[in-house]
Length: 101
Figure 1 (cartoon, rainbow, N blue to C red):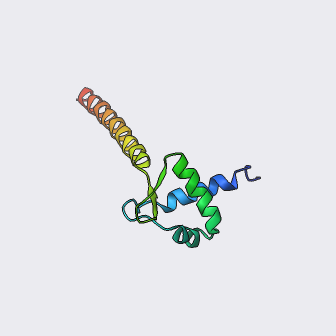
Figure 2: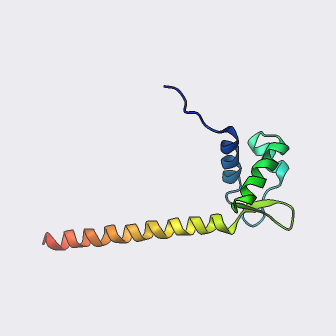
Figure 3: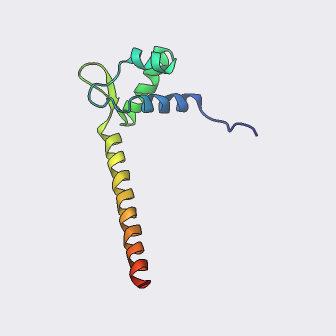
């Protein structure tokens, strides 16, 4: 099976986004990201600029980079959606069990 045609710059951007996970308070430097992802600092800089432009990353006062509040809001929204779905499943299960008695 052939590999689908993908964007190498898009993949790099997503890898940078994932590398920032868990570093929202202290962030990572461009060089930390370049070493961790085996990329050039210039490529990391372009990826970070794209993430910042799209509101997905931010440059901290320390000069390091972290996920933005927007990414954290997406995570919370997803968590809330899953919790609502689980509540609906629980309610349905309770009705099924109540009807089987």
